[in-house]
Image (cartoon, rainbow, N blue to C red; front, side, top):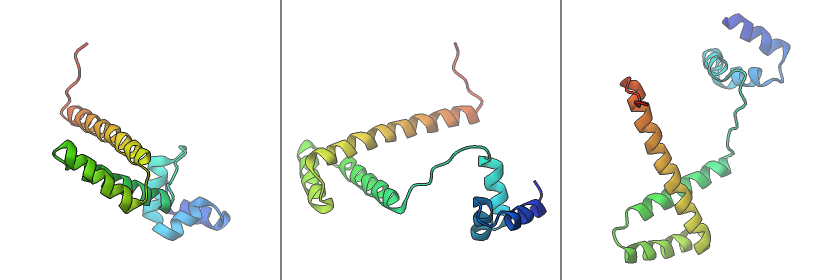
Length: 122
C-alpha cells in the first residue's frame, strides 16, 4: 500500500476511520495499522474500562503479595473499603485476574517455545 493512496482515501472519505487514524497518528502508523489489522474487527476499550482493568490489576497484585491467610483477609477488607467494592465483587476480580495471570504465563511459555522452534511431540 503506498502512502499516496492513504492520502487520496482520506480526502475522498473524510469521515472514515482511515482519515481519522491518518489525522491522529500520521501516515506511517496508519499504514502499519491497516497492514496488521486490515480486514479484522477490533474493539478498543473505553477509558472507564481501562481504569477498571488498572484497578483490577492493582487488587490482584496487592492480594498476591500477601503471605498468610490472615494478611489476605486484612488486605481484602482494606481493598473493599478503598475501592468501594463488595466482598463478592472483590473475590470475583481476584479469581478472574488469577485466571488471566495463569493464561498469560501459558501464552508466554508457548511464545518462548515457538521462538526457540520447540514443539510438542505427539
